[in-house]
Length: 454
Ligand code: SAH
Image (cartoon, rainbow, N blue to C red):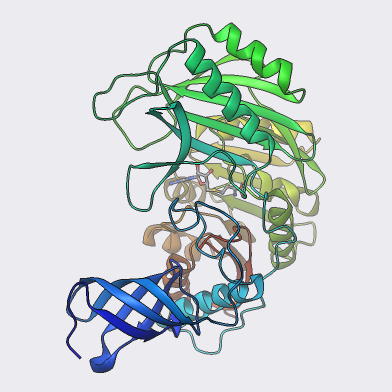
């Protein structure tokens, strides 16, 4: 069947891409991707773009809806680039996420019949996030905050995202009002003018502490004292207001320089019974409650008996390693962001942990150095960003020859690629547990146990 732009075709959706787009096939084997569709949908689809073996389309009409469909409860669904699964039941979402991990390990990793446990459920599929980074833009109605539309720099205004705590809206409203009253504008990336770039909010759920960070093109805003008073009068749990300077013409949200304008330069949260200090630049899991479950599984996989040397690579503020430091002889954490390493050191002190040491540096380079120094970890935990591990690091890890490697990953595809490399060395994949940290979005976290071949 030949298709061209603007054709209307009938399509049955049979699977999902890793980004959460529905997939259907038409005669001749051409695959059509349709966002916001559900497996089982029978659709009338308008073709938007045609390539050799695939095409993109959008729903014209749902002829026969999938059984997994539910009513969409957010006006920005499909526009904001955040959620991709608000239109299907949570059970279906979990099935899709499970299948994504299965597909990645088979297709990219080449693993058949690998043990993948059911997806660990999120008890709260809404309002689970403890962090928001909201770009600011100038509109007819003054400064608005929102989200970037999919693959774009257009901002979709959003006053209340269902994934965020309710209080974040208060911060947005106060800030918008302040910007209006003091006639200040948002940064415009085309002209390089205007001050406010992003509003960055962080919430520590267990201590109820809130941090507001303004990312500015410059040093600060005019009449900051007015803004701080307004925030303080309305948000009783406000613990910190920080101005972050970012003068670069870049997509990177945060600059490196912070100035504390009110309260502390950090907030604290409790995770796995330990207290953690969180500075603006330090990484912290966005879903605290699910992160606890994730770390519990990581701890089970690490299977520490008390005498081990544990290496925690990509350790952030030390959370994973410190949550199990009581169970090993020595903990070494490695992290590239200096503020996070400083937090990790303080976090060890704060929790009376005396067997931990933290190194600031690249995981790959630091591991090579540790190996040269003769450090022999019994267990290595890795928790890299989405791009996964580099091949050199996998080589170094296998030379360090730990009994177990616990791989925490936020990207099933790079995980699968790396597991293949490990299995070409002397390691076997024992099992993977997907944990739903990012409900309603396409992302899925995984924790995987690898053991050394005897
Ligand atoms: N394990 C931590 C952090 C995981 S996020 C937790 O669960 O909270 C990944 C971390 O890797 C981030 O803190 C990031 O700053 C750090 N990172 C990124 N690239 C790195 C590299 N090349 N070497 C070491 N750390 C790196």
